[in-house]
Length: 315
Image (cartoon, rainbow, N blue to C red):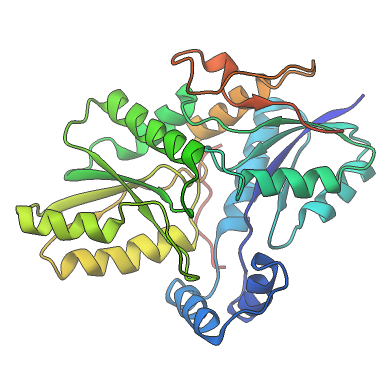
């Protein structure tokens, strides 16, 4: 049976005119308030009118395909190519089983769980196996460390906030940060959540803004925000960090920088290859990836059903 790989990502609009439809997909067809539509549209306008997530996901898939020598497909949950569209391509290519990896290293039902649900629903005739998380995959940690090394300032690791409790996600996100810090021998680093939703409710914290307020009071003047819950550029990086947090920090006398996103990192490509290589086709339920530190071969595997960075180009 022909085998391939499926990478899954959130999806992002590629033109500012697509933002209303994109938000409709994100909300599952539920109405989007004028306030949310206006705010999200402004954010995309501030980064050039579109998000580069699709472009970088394509780069990551093509790099992994060259590395592994087998077909690598990618699908998006909230934009083209939708997971259903990609599964049609998989069947047309004669691929009968897929090793599936979400481009979100830490597991949550609200992200990875939904990718799994959509892929399983579209998988007719294709056998799927999953790597549900890989928060402390050694080459992932190395890739983040390579980007962060040499930057000056207090390091604040971040991940995308989710509604509380999301305890497994919280533990895994913090574990990724701790592993990168240990790899670089960092001291005094901290962890916070960014990009809380616009719909209200209680979200995981602390927030980046709370940390920056405290740093300003303590006299900290240089901060490096190091996102470890994201593997490529998109609006949460290019707007939330580069525009919003940078201005927030500057108003408090803080110079804020960040490392380059993983994007086309060859080390990240190798990390994905390691994750794929550990997905067994035998049916077994793995241990939690955080329960056995150092046992990378068991990280985040679960049963399912059924090159270098590219040059920046206009959206």
